[in-house]
Image 1 (cartoon, helix red, strand yellow):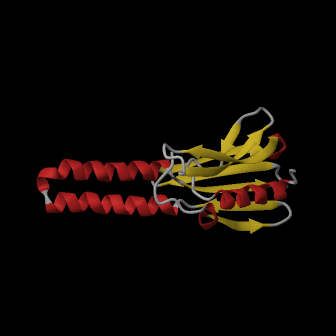
Image 2 (cartoon, helix red, strand yellow):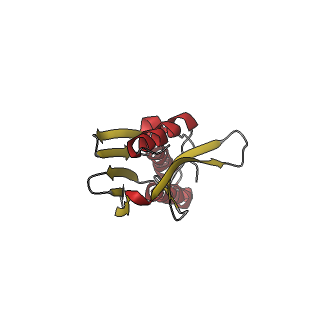
Image 3 (cartoon, helix red, strand yellow):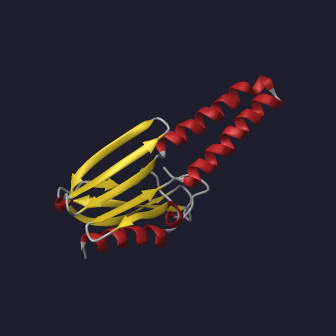
Length: 162
């Protein structure tokens, strides 16, 4: 799913730590948080200004919370010493942690999604395993292929993938 007000991943991704054996990246969906704030404010404004449309205001607020659930913060840790890739997804509704073996990773690539409008493409980084399965680092797409490519290059460089 693409979101309006997308920001480049470069603004969302931050290298928390990088050594020879450890790479930790953190992704924060600022664009979703900004959009959510606007939608919640609009919902409350509708409820306060015109109480007979309070159901519409409640729908705006519910939609905002749905977006928060769908776009958690992600911490991606690649640890050569332990041989693990750990993805930690945190949202207002909980934390999910999954772990994979680094030896299973075959590639890291840019995934592209084209919205209904031709010029509205969005991108995300995805890890490809030997089984052929893909693991998106984030569940959401962002604008700016160059920024996503920088994320992919950073991970490939760390893992010594061509």
